Length: 389
Image: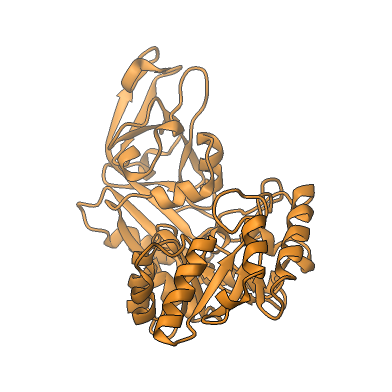
């Protein structure tokens, strides 16, 4: 039995995926591609007239670049952002006609690779601008690139003094084609935060030095800000994959990932016994314990553990909740299945660890992290199924 709340077609697809999973699979990771496409569409609609790119770095946030790319190409996504040159090269092999930017910038001596693979660096410093400009001048070809300005993140991007220096040297821009001017919002996940306006004004000021070039400021959360922030190009990431990009507001995006862990043993535990490493949790009643073959080596974080002092994560079998018991270990996690009907709990069956009832953001709140880390940490030991119902 899978979780309720799914539509019939997807529920049936999940049932099939679990039934057909190899007997050796201790966990099954299901990625719902239509939900991913709808999330992209929602971000595009929120971005109004801006072109909507897609951020697919870190192997599409851990979900697999090839199937995610194919899904996004069924929508209007034609521009993609990755982090590194290696990621860009891998993406180019899958998408011959896509526009591909690398966010981490131009590393020394890599200009020829960008040219050969038709990739676009995001130039994050005056030194990178100078190197790209010199390469284009030497080879007499106006290759495109983005230029990023730091308006408050203090991470990468041209600082105000460097932006002024660049504006004073227009000859640096002539050999290549600045395709887009970028920056990155620090507090986009808090729509009313005053620093959003501070950064917008800083970005307006710096881009006024370089008229006639497309501008890009917003990520997933930024797509949900006021229209003036959207400019020419939006860059959603986490929202596409089902994470909530805002801190307080309910999510406007659908879950994309479901994770099921295989029950490797069902056992009895007496009241007063302790469970797991460190004996951190004491059974308050005679209990039926489901031991699931997923642990922190699979990206199911140790911080999801429970103890006598605090609850941990919760799994589900259908509508039945299974509170986590004790510590998550490397390969195994124990759950309280006492209230699950006997007929639904069997060795070799599955417990839902992630989905609609427990989202990536729920797990993030328990562990004190963010949905991005939950998604990108999902391990490689899972049997993966891409559902395109």
